[in-house]
Image 1 (cartoon, rainbow, N blue to C red):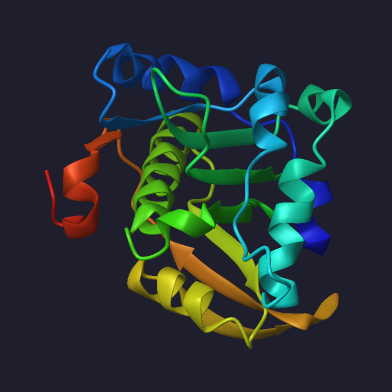
Image 2 (image 1 turned 180 degrees about the vertical axis):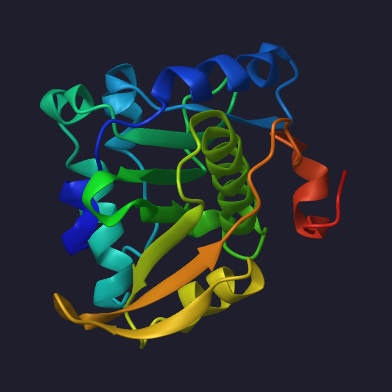
Length: 212
C-alpha cells in the first residue's frame, strides 16, 4: 500500500472517546470495536488473516506482514487504527488502519483485514462500516472533503466485493502504483453515530448493513 505512509495526523482521540462506551460490556460473547494502540503490539503479533499452509495469495499475506510487523514507533504518527476483539480476551478478529491525507484532500483506508478463522462472518464489512461512520463524523466536525479512497489489487476479488458492497467504485489504475486500482467513495458527513460498534458473536453470521 504505497499511500499508507502518507496518512497524516488523524482523529485517534476522537475515535477513542466515541468507541469507549462500546467496550464497557463485560460479556464475553460481545465483539467490540476499539482504538488500537501500542499496548496492543503483543496481541497483533498473533493476528493471522491468511492460511498458514502457504496457500494464501500475496494480497492476503501483505496485510498480515504489515499488522504483525507494527512497532512502537509506528504508533507515534497519529494514524488511526481500529480492532475488533472481545473485552475479556486477547484476540484480534479484525484490523483497520486509516486516516486523512492532507495533500490529497481526502481520507484513505490503508489496511483492513479479518482473522482467517473468522472468514465468512462479515467481520470485514462490520469493521469497514465503523471506519466509514467515524470518517463521516470527522468530516462533519472538521469540514474536510468527505472523499475516501483505497488501493485494491485487481486480482483480489474479496476486497473488490467488500468495498463495492460499501458503495465504493473502481477508479482504475493508480498512476503512482500501477499494481493497484484506486477505489473511491464520497460519503455524507454526519454528526451522530449511525452504525453498531459492537456485535453478539451469535449475530455475526447474520450481520448486514441494514442492522440497527
